[in-house]
Amino acid sequence: MTGTKAYEVAPSAARLTGSLRDIGYDFPTAVADLVDNSITAGASRINVFTQFEPNGSYVLISDDGCGMSESGLVEALRFGTRRDYETNELGRFGLGLKTGSLSQCRRLTVATRTSPKHRSIRVMTLDLNRIARTDRWDITANETSPAIEHAKRILRESPGTVVVWEDLDRVLPERYAESGWGRRRLRSLAGKTAEHLAMVFHRFIAGDVPERGEVVICVDDEKLRPWDPFAPEEPERLVLPEHVFEVETDSGSSEVCFRGTVLPARDRFSSLDEFERLSGPLKWNRQQGLYIYRANRLVQHGGWSGLRGIDEHMKLARASIDFDTDLDEPFQINVAKMSVELPPVVRQMLERPVAELCVLADDAYRRSANSGERPDASPKASKASETALRDVGIALKAALIEDRSLVEFHSALDLLRSRHPGLAKQLDL
Image (cartoon, rainbow, N blue to C red; front, side, top):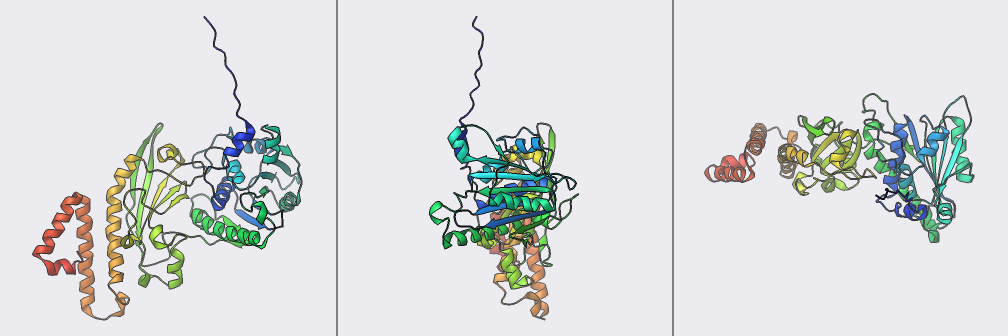
């Protein structure tokens, strides 16, 4: 009987690193993946710095976290690091530092310092041009350049880690690397990155994550203001009761939490400026829907994940869904942490609370559309009666959705409209 023989088939470093550059990152999401690492390292201050230099532009992402040992730094630059991740660490596959960075640049350097007592700074570089020449999975130590020297200056002040992006071929193509267009593009990307980080990490920036303090994030030394999609400072918003669902896993079960919020209509917002700010990067219509958080980090910002379609009348409806990292597989979190899929069991559980949220959001929208001024601007007592009747209508619609099928719901409304048209109008049905 012939014995089994095994062969080690190592992938081509040059081919695979080239392929891994195209897994879906853009500039803001690539930076966000590195901010994940900084937060995991316990950083309380993170700065993204962009520097335009003709044919020598670079990006630095620095933090004041715990830094890395030599072996830790080597492991961090390995594709598919062998380290284990603890529950609710923001990392997932051991790829983000490399794939996120190399989606934007050809030369990645990490400089790190672990102790305020020791001024030793470790520097290691992963260079795609070198890998293309040698076809080897190697990194080099103690490279130097103006960007790397800038990183060292930062670390001489205090411990932490600085990630350096050079040869920004995906950010500034060679023909634009020394032009005014290139300068404007880098400035524009910095602005989009600030907007994205303020949204994705808003709970960390606001200090709303249990057992850790506020995280200061700056882009080009400008401190970010958290963009919370649920407008917690607006007194007119409506927050629905939380729903908690149990989802089975291989090791037991874990919770998924859903909480719906109806934001105030434009005429009920504290100010027009705040209404415009809360419209979000994609504006009101496309920002409606589900905001899905993995370990308090936002991974989906808007949309209904196939539960329903985008609707102008629902644009005030937003809902948070929270899950821990032990549900990564059921939610199919991707490498870039840019997309998730609702597990079928969760999708089924969400149908009723989402329907109730949309009924309330639709009512808030229609009230605003039918009112030429703020409801409290008129002293007439009849206004209070009309408001009370509309509230009854909302409760009726929510109850019908909760207890009946969609077909029966429409039939019941049709019957009420035909028999009591005046009452149906007052109930806003």
